Amino acid sequence: MGWRNFELPQGTQIAPGRLRGYYIDFRVKAETPSWPPPWFPWPGFHRYMAIAQWGLGCYERYLSGEGDSWLAGAVEAADHLIGQQESSRASEGAWLEPVRPHTFPVAPPWASAMAQGQCASLLVRVHAETGKDALLEAANRALIPFKRSTAEGGVLARLDGRPFPEEYPTQPPSFVLNGAIFALWGVYDVQIALRSADASDMYRDIVEMLASNLDRWDTGYWSRYDLFPHRLIAVASWFYHYLHIHQLNALHAITRRDEFRSVAERFSSYASSPTSRARALAHKAFFRILIPKRRPRRVAPAR
Image (cartoon, rainbow, N blue to C red; front, side, top):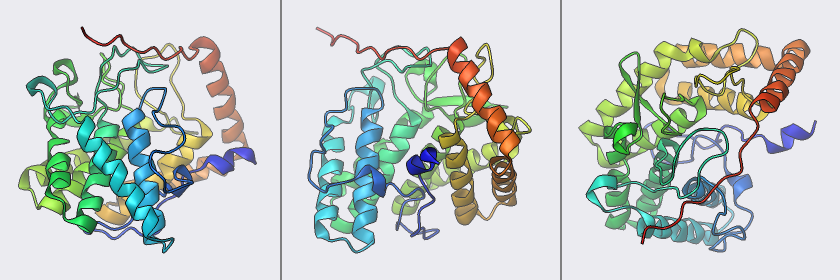
């Protein structure tokens, strides 16, 4: 089936407690080690996420023994991210997206917890290989927006009073599951690299929030993409449903929390059911008829 070609599997070189392979295998995102990649600069939203994923894909290829050129690509991507990171007090540590996303009501410029986490994950891995202090400093600054609410320009929302890192800083919160997990991994990686008590506390709080609330993304036949109050709930596409499964299995590998494994198994059972797959596909198609994607729009630069 064609959709399987776009699946992002769990990473094969995960080493809990160490900065080794990434938790999702992004090698498919990096087809050449030459910086910049052919699509640069990314024309849509989530441009910094695209750079981080490309760099993490390069790093995974390097770990897989494909040559030092792949590490060089990851280094160049990380150096580019350092140069793009905000230093102003109001947005310190953020990578601000200048384009409006296609589904959620977010006005540019905006910060994404998912981008913050993936950029931090790349920076600390490249630091582990190169020892460049600027990379570690930038990764630590990447967590500053996690301490500010989305209303204040950060990426922090609350779910039952617990911190939720928002991929899209919407009002009301959107609570995108895959984005929160990617963000969590960035926090996890920074606390490994820095042995930071602050990052460790942040990591534990987000883990507890997710473990306690996973059922919210379970429709009984498929996973939900988010918890935003759309006119119709947003079930995950097949791509994101399988990504949820791989993410939850990777979370179980590093946390040993049974909640993540049991929900991954439940979501896998839905994916094995032709009835559930057909129902999810029909629901998603109707969702896009009811709520079509908007064309991403770039914000004009300030004068």
